[in-house]
Length: 620
Image 1: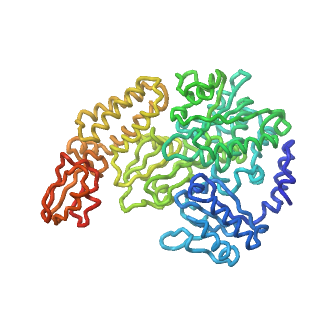
Image 2: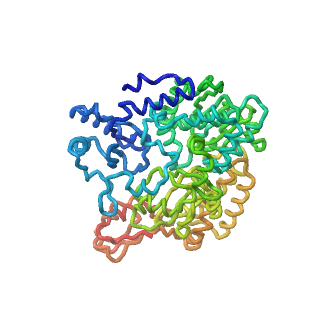
Image 3: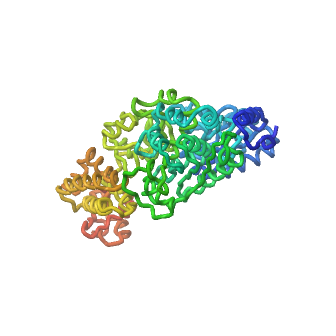
């Protein structure tokens, strides 16, 4: 059966179910598959060359009719890409190159023997099945349930796994109040950072008497190291469309917009394909499923301003103005886009909705904690063995993400901290590794869940420098509209810069805390209100490092360049190799005599250290 012959405009709920059943019986759906990750990370690593090699090898071996090569969304373990999964036996191959494909086809697909050199090593033994790898086994994939299993550019794949059944359910058997109640029962909180109850937000807009309402999706993912929303857009775009359509029905909206940054070209391309397909099949647009409900969707692209992740700044940007926040109240649910009631949620939040409706709010609430329900996606990065996209139940301990899923530290150094919540988040030290990752527990430690960025650091990281990095980011990204954020973050950065340069004073710590309180309490929007978090959390958990920088003029990790000292030891034999490479002639001494370094002239470039072959130079 050719799937394309049976794809058509979906007239009603029964027609949708009939189409799904046809797809499940089709030859294409039931054929054995080779899944190739076509997420942004794997594409950058060469997965499209791997795909082309598979197509060529399967053709030359007469297997093209028996095996389908499928491009999927992100499978998760980005550090291991390009990754390939053989569908029939769930074999997981990592770091596959085009030249490896011949072995996979001939030895595995034809000969039945696993290519062990491409398997992921687990505790010195090879594990072949994806489901047995600790990275996957310790996750609870709900929102990411389809990523890595369907072709994101084919609506047929989404319908075959139950896509748009939740939309059909609400349009044919639920009124708007029942939909909102189901979302409220689930306990779903907004996954964009603040964690506001989704059902409550939807209910505010639903109760408005205004005939014109809007529903918006925030896909302006700006946290350094975060790629949760991008991966959903790339791997399962129809789940966002369906979630937004359900939300539109719940609040009485006929028009939605997805605000996505232009730096996500692949995500934009796949989302637009999905929107066009959904419109062609009658799943958005006029008279959806013959119910009389009308809803359409458009993409609006932003230019990458971090502040446009704030809801009122995003709304202002869609309106065609400079992305700057507005005072609240009134909140967008009362007066938002073009002055009309507006609901804004992020990508991950909307992707929860179809599953939530299908399974019921009470079932959804079984996962998570008492106050934080469901699962959460994290972008695990930094000094872990396996970085990538992971999904776990809310409340899962941080230790499980770092060690059970991420495989532990990728260096010989110990875990030191994890920066969670992006530039507005905080650092979690080793003594709190067992903290449950939920909104309340993280807030107690001076951190936030945020959108899910999680950067792990080992003992080579200087926490004062970490605070400086994130403070510099938020200061650069401040829109400048309000004085506390514009000037306060600039003054905080000046103080931290002085401390890193060895020019700080003990009173600077009190000054930082005072400024942080002012910026937090007086800033107009969430960017300024949370901008001091990296400084406050590092002061709270790593205050001794600030004191060392100020009092001892020492950076224990030798990261802060102005505090680094190079010293030539007695082992020096006067070979003069270091003297020859020093660009400022800071190394003194005669040939075959121990040299010395003039610390006033030294620019701390490190050339002497890297040149010495006798371990006669140390850095501290």
